[in-house]
Each structure stands twice: as C-alpha cells, then as structure tokens.
Image 1 (cartoon, one colour):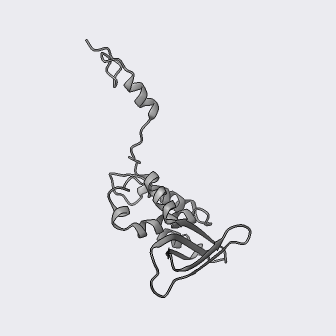
Image 2 (cartoon, one colour):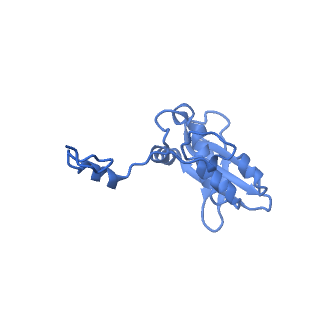
Image 3 (spheres, helix red, strand yellow):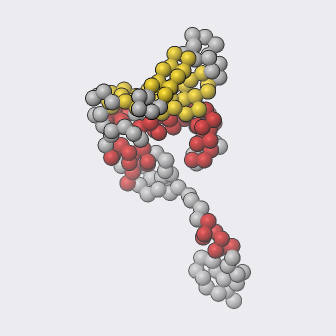
Length: 164
C-alpha cells in the first residue's frame, strides 16, 4: 500500500471482508458498482473480500473475490500456504491478495509493478533494492525430472559420465 501511495497517483486504498449478513452488491461491465454496508451486529462468517482504490484524478478500480476463490488461489500460488501467515492470519492475507489483484489495473509506475512481483519470490539476502536480489524460488522442471528418472543406473545424472 505504501508503494501505491508513493506512486503519487493513488489517493485512497481499502480492503475489506464481507460477512454473510452484510449488505453487499457489486456489478462489473461498462458502469461498475460496489456497495457494502456492514451489518451492525451478528455479521456472520466471512464470505467475500474486496479491495478498491481511487486515483487523485478521479479514477477508481476494485476487485472482489469469494472466500473460496481466495483459498483456491492461496493453495495454488503461495509457497507458504501450509505454514505461515495463511494459517495464522487468513483474513489479512486474503485482503492482501485481493488488493494486489486490484492494483494490477491501477495507473501506477513500473517500479511499483516490479516491487509487487518481487513480493512473490524467495530471497536469501536482504538489501535496499530487493528486486535486484536473485529469485531463489524452487520450481520443478517436469522434463528434467523425467529425463533424470530415465537415466540408466551406471550413468551419473549430474555429469553424464559412465560409472565403472
């Protein structure tokens, strides 16, 4: 959020939970609309999350995700889903997710977009410019795995040399 404000384009950013008993309506299309009136009591369980931003020139955007959509997204995309903030503070992580998705459409600088992308990486070093640090996120190359599995026992898979 701080990076979005520092871009100089963003006037306001909000992210909220929507509970079962809240009044909530949204429409997409040529004239998008978003209305959320929280229930005064007995709000019920969280069902949706949304984020909205406004620019200093009057532009705006929003993103809405159901709790199930956020859960599915987190399970597919987050390397720390099974242990970490997704387990200890799901609502905060859900709001962060919907906020980042909404800001993809905001008129903000390239540096901001680069910083958001860096947030999804794994790094060993800490520096003033984290986006310059190498991404150490582990990925599995299915082609490489299948070729290693098919290497005969007398071949060293790392060097390709024939063992005696």
